[in-house]
Figure 1 (cartoon, rainbow, N blue to C red):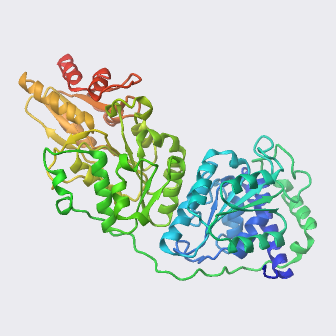
Figure 2: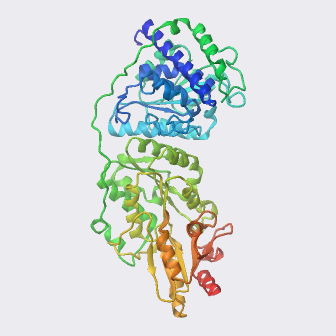
Figure 3: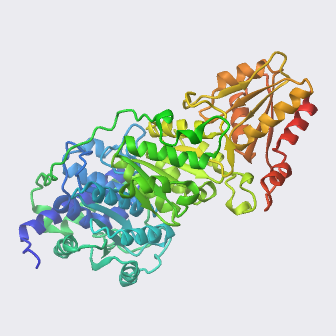
Length: 629
């Protein structure tokens, strides 16, 4: 049974919605850019969510039990800034600095404004992030709810339906998705235009509890949220019929006004039109709203360094010198060790847990393991949601499959989310599965993400130690590249590894060239070294396990003592890989850098044949050395 809704509450929310719409016009006009009509369609929805539904400790936006709000239709962010002005968080002067270089109020949401939950604006990502937050609440037994405001245009994104499937699978009744159906996209009608029932049918087919309402009827919106709060074991989708540019007849429901602010000289006239359109709401004296406080829960401290000890690990014998273990499996053991040390470690999988060995973590900590199935975009979005709620997420799949989630990864980079990602089965060395399964673009992809680190271990010990480094890296996305085949352990268990380091494995007097590799190619370099030694040819060797950041100082020092010549060898395409990382770092040095990399489209075959075909095996390395000297 719905509670009776007072006329005073309805009028109060109408007043807030009117002020939000007005301020959305003012700030975008002052900026000379933005999307006022998209803000106006959602003003009533935002008013009701912010001033009736959200439980927020405004003085502490990171309160672990605050209700969460994600604006997936990020271009409408002025409507949120306007709401925070009404809450007293933003001054009018700050609001009118929208999109200025020195303002934290950017054109699409980023965490520079500390009340923004995530970087959005690349459409279709908010729902997955919301799932991560909602799952976190379930894990922690918190009672906060997560609200995601979406646009009907972004519903065309496949990532939305990936996420919808997972929200239903996990029965997230603490997740409320609101779709602002104003029927207009950037260039024309959205897919279903004003047939809102079609969106509802889709969400219902995916297992959601759905409601189709008017997005401008405050009483109906309130009643629907009451029903949503009573829903059990299903995520909720509220499909709200709205009007783009609501309240201004000269633009309402008309095309070609998307992303076009109104002229400054017209603003006062437009404000008067809105006030005349909604006289009761405009005449009400605007009141400051104090949100209901969330239930108090204990806030966790998350700044302690996480330490794992390989020599005390129950699997330590697998890491003895000379023992063979795949780096992907060493990752699984290290992840399990981290899970024992810290309850905030979360593992996410894309239905490859027996290949990435996240199943080792799952066996020990099933409640902290999230199966995302074959939905890599959602896996990254969910990891982002977890990380924003102070969890330490590790997500793993084949390196090749992370490419389809690159948009989510780059947005995590913009949001400065500390995601820990592992890409296994990299390079042609995976063998017969063929090129579709070979991660050959991943180093390039992750190097280009701001504040990212790229780590490429060559044996079990370095893998274990670098996973520990990732757990303690909180400034952005970290990426670990792991190999399918077993490789021998070359480091003692007490060897130290750090982000931005490298290992000089061999260095002699009169070295003719410096060989640099990582992962599988380091072992080919070691074979080549032994053969060259028999021919009395001295070469130096570097394990460049940190591809980004790179230890430029050490590389230069060793190269200068090696006749100013470097050969890099990598199981990755040439463009953007390890070799070009070295070349760009040394661009101002008088050092010649030669790259051996994958330059031909691979095919199915044995590891040995493929590495020979791509000229990155030991014989090819020897041939290149002899050619240079």
